[in-house]
Image 1 (cartoon, rainbow, N blue to C red):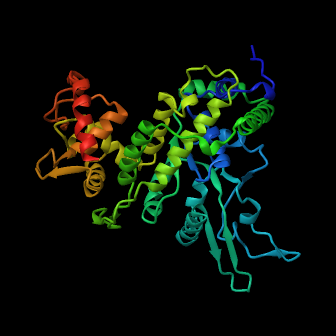
Image 2: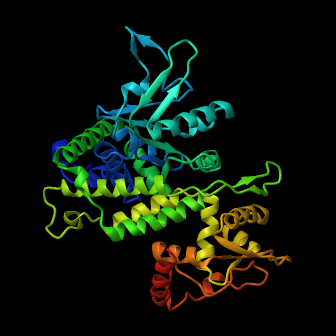
Image 3: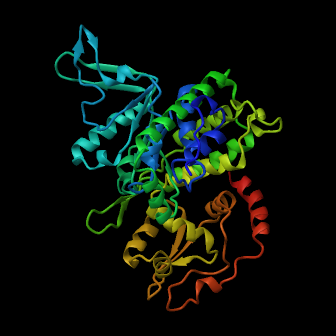
Length: 440
């Protein structure tokens, strides 16, 4: 039996909106709806721009989420980008007609940012250069026909892309990345296919309904938010976000490698955490505004004191870690978990990838100063161990299950499932807090 839909004006809280979305889409990710809304609200109410990439496989829900916000009059959907999309130099009746001047203080949406990455290297490089300038709020273009373009302002962005984005992150990071990423957790494949079949006949009507619901709710949030600039995020939360932003920006920083061998050639100075922390804190402020707009907010809700919930804090941590290239993340997590370190062969076995590929990932993590390397040779290869200061952050933020073991390859290690997790996990965390505070 089909569920009854609410009227758009009945959507007065994020919880009601999430339930309404769930009537149409099968979402395993419990935070993606709030993240999308916070991106729009944060861009609209605060000075710092937020640029979020929703990362998911094809048919993974990113396009549907972006379609829902396109009913607002300050949202500008862009299907494709060329070097002349933002500023062509064309004028009508003596007035500048460039897209930038039309959308100032608005938000751009890209349903498929991946298509931009498929362009030739020169075009892609020029577009990324323009995007960096636009994020920074100061764009200029010389057209050669006495129609030079100057623009200053602020623009937000929400885009969808597949995981192929991680192959191109070096082009972003070596010149300062402006995007943060949110990987959409995927539901069971078979259940998702069943839901898609259910939506086949009337999906256009359901999309229109959800777009109306998003439009009504976000308009409600903006209208109910008074003195947004007075929202102050709790100092303890800010400190946690600073630490995770410091780690994530270091871990995603550029590492230049030889084109043929893949070996590390040069390591530029690591990206500073300023842009990422600004976006994370703005998203946190948007969470507070969204919660305060709820007419039935309980008196003891953290939003009354400028605080966010634990679930919202975890979403921000996730966004920071999702912004790290996938290959490096796959190496970083086991490094944090195995207190004795990991061998090249051990990590390759765990990830089910070729040893030579995993070795390159570990070399990049090592080059960024996140782990140490002990040359061993033999079938196990070198041993790699995460530095204490970074493990402390990983264990504190991610609350990983840890093992007082080395991670070795199949020829010398028992079944991993037989290894006991460290019983003194809480003691480890408590012991790390003091030393972490001293280091930072």
